[in-house]
Amino acid sequence: MTNKAPAYQWYPKDYDTDEAVKLMTYEQEGIYRRLLDHQALHGSIPSDPRAIAKLVPKISAARFLKLWPALEPKFKRQGRRRVNLKLRRVKGDFAAFVGDGKSRAGRASAQLRLQLYGTAQPQKPRRDPDVCSGGPVRGVREEQVANSPMFLEQPRTAVEPASASASAEEEKADLGTPIQVSAVERLLPKFKKTHGRLRSPPRHGRFR
Image (tube, rainbow, N blue to C red; front, top):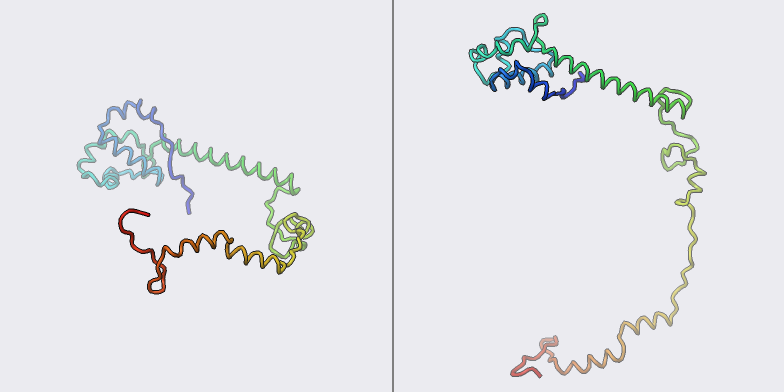
């Protein structure tokens, strides 16, 4: 698979100040941009104007041939193909910039490995035989894991069995206090038992 950049740099000032571009119609400018994109993806465009017309099928070949004279100076013939020289230079400069950045990053990474491991070659992960059996924890030995606060046994507090008196107090509390019971007894006459359920009788007149 080829490693092509998905975009290319565009310089609006250079484009706007180009006299040849200013003399183009908007239709010609649109075709020009389409041909630049084609070159960015494929490296060049065909040399024959009739073949180039097939790259812009939204207009007829006859119409394209009338517009081509203003576009032809922008694409120089290179053998059987044509290229825009500035676009090729821009893409070359960008590729060199990216490649130089990767080289600097690679050298910095190799220098760091040399300081840490004594060699600039990439190191593969190694499983230490002394590592605990819970999993491949790189660089952590069994004694380090055992002494970790996470794995230290925490002191346990003894829980005394509940006494019979405490259970009795809890059951007594669940039944409610005598004040609560007497309050319920005072409210019972206000309800009548109907079909096994207590219901409040209908009220007539003023609320009492």
